[in-house]
Image (cartoon, rainbow, N blue to C red; front, top):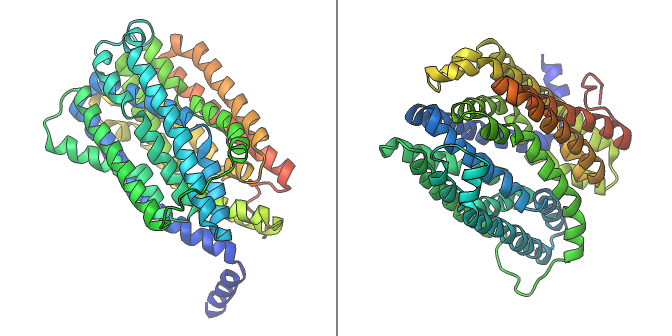
Length: 440
């Protein structure tokens, strides 16, 4: 036993990159677990207090905001994280402030433009696209959160580039659910537009706190400092397509349900999807720490170190994702019943979504590996194929099969995109992330 402990200690000492990722992931994972619990509780309270009809209106608006804020950020998320990580390693505060300001200007400006367009076209949307009674009162409030979501998310990825993992995870997934939980429990909320106002307040707080963390991590302003626009543009443009298509994979079925299904079905699908996505919390926690490490190791030409970190990351992810997936497959009706007895009919959809989410998570940080090593075009094609499958199956299945059709479309899209990324990582970087049994 003593010899095994000594061997383990020597192994950790000889693998500083994995030790750093494990420590960072553990901190991020701890915060992520707490925030995932908060988000899960928030969804339960929303569903129970509003019921399927009103909850469906809120979730439909929420999905639209998440989708459009991702498009509005122009693919800057990973670009900001990568350039901030490089500038941090180089000790270049000029570039730190330069990329930060330019990213906020570009991403925040486009999100603001989207908000204005949606406010002007609100009546057209509710009359001809989302013909759901009551959605016209919810949509204008929700879209005002668009620039706030875009800006606080960019702060998150800047913080991850600075290795402020706990701060980043908390801003991204903790502030809004905590604010909403407090508001939902304190005030007698019964309608979707009331929840939308609480959501808007939560997004404002997330942005303010994100700005505070950033300025504490990177003191000073470096007035006059700039970051080359052509360099940022060349990096984020390929990723922009990836982000848009990735959001299509994740949320298109829910939006199509809003077009062809009832608002109650939208609520069932939203709850099932958000529950299944809990399987992926381990992947996010590992990516938050491993992403900057992938970029640094690749830029240094350390391919052996890159492979070791990637494969150990997969093992860590599986250790956490397998129990979650098994629990969802064994107790789907009980989990959906937490949101109210009306939601138990979504148990089969939860099982289907859990399968797709598990496959997408179990393959490891393959998307991050491609984007952090300069292979954005290949990543874009993989996501494009997944998006085409998701939308195509959604259009084909949702009108006739409703909730089950939406779950199948989303699961196939998520799984296929990530399996294609496994193939590209193997082809371009020379190792298979599924080969977790390999000695490294």
